[in-house]
Length: 90
Ligand SMILES: [Zn+2]
Image (cartoon, rainbow, N blue to C red; front, side, top):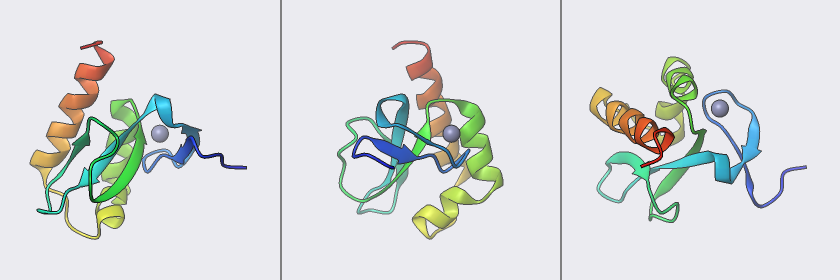
C-alpha cells in the first residue's frame, strides 16, 4: 500500500520512501530540472537518488512520458549533476 511519503521511481519502477528520492519538475516555462525544494510548481516525477535510475529513465523514455515531451540531453545532464552533488553530500 502506497503511503503519502512513498513514490514510484520512473527509472526502476519501484516504490520508495520519498526521502531517498528526488523530484524532477517541468516548470511552467517548460524547463525540466531537478526540484531542490520538492515543492516547485509544475508537473513532477520522482526518481531514486542515483544515476543508474536516471539512466534507466532515459533508456525507457520514462522522462519523456512523464513530462509528455522530449526531454533534452542538457536537462538530463543537469539532473545527473544534481544527483552527483547530492550523493557527494553538498
Ligand atoms: Zn529507482
